[in-house]
Image (cartoon, rainbow, N blue to C red; front, side, top):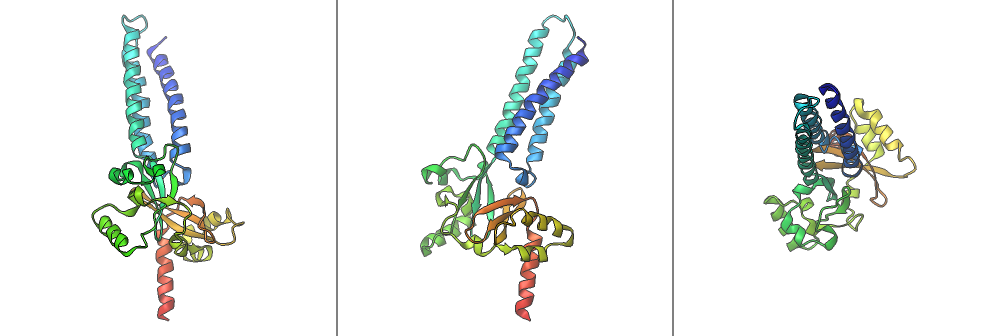
Length: 262
């Protein structure tokens, strides 16, 4: 066997293993509509680049048929490659999407390494550990008690915003109706959308044409933004859209302000 053939076989095996791993990661941790906003492409590209290049390249360099100690060399390369894969997956695991948190006027995609550990210890049992199999939808309403609300505002000013505090999480949907009140209607979204995106928004709402009153809320994260479509009647999440919501909300707010001035 030539070194090129050995390297090619190594590449093929590495590709199959990585494809299987990536299929799970994308299926469970990074839903397709949230893939870009979560910058998953960057994380997985680095992991793929290292693992697909490292092993096959080393095999190409050291392989020589009949070489003494070849089995040991190949075993060492496999161990190094597995270690690189495990380290990369650990990094992806630590930064995986953990929660989609509904707050007063939007949703937040919170990554596992953004959750405050001290707050997690005080949370309800189901929120003390970040989910393993994909982001969980929760609600984090502002406290109704004045003192508790003031304390939450102070915590946010010091860096602990409510979406990162699992001790404030409750099941979604909850009696927190604030996000739904702030959702734009389909008509408002389509009329306010930039012309280049209008068709995309129409297609997004068309998928939920059986829902009488769908609406739009922003989905924000430290890595980017996307959109959430909700049922304005009960707050139920219908789906996610890989479109930036802020131009729509800015245009809708301006139109509302202009209407009030008139």
